[in-house]
Length: 211
Image (cartoon, rainbow, N blue to C red; front, side):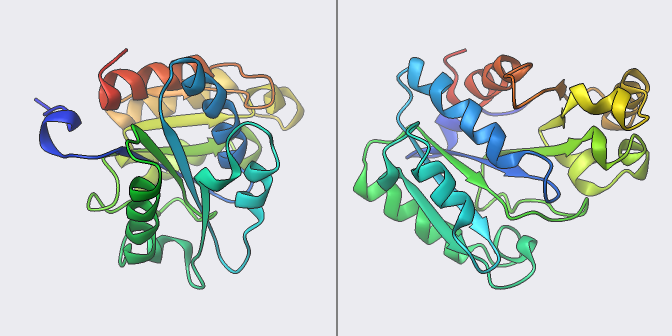
């Protein structure tokens, strides 16, 4: 039985968002921000890129969040290095945000685009989600990468593209559910907001305990 995050740590809960390049991680963050704002969740965001601040700048210019509540981490190496092997840069960024905007309820931490093997250090996050998309191939769940198997929530994004890229979406969902052993699978379209409320519900219930 899992122990509520609120009972095991102080400060903001940290939720990681990983997945391959182009799967829709930043688009997911853009959908999550206003929904948590409606819940009066005090939020900040950390984005990771190799050598740019592009994702952070996109969010800062979005009008969805105070730009100062978005911090960029330039990994300068393989993206999973700074979320798994040595998360010091991200831990420092999270600590800075918590000190500056205390009290925070939630920090969303978006990984740089990586492969199916990327995972988050549990020293860095309390809970993490992995985003794949149908355009990447309907066989992704069958490849059983750690991101697909171990994440707290698997998100299959760009559901609308399935008929255009020759993917049987229902089969992809069944195979994802089969390899995850009962852990949640959510189908989304981050351009339209389809499925995002379910993602919010998981975070609210499992991490913030106000769902």
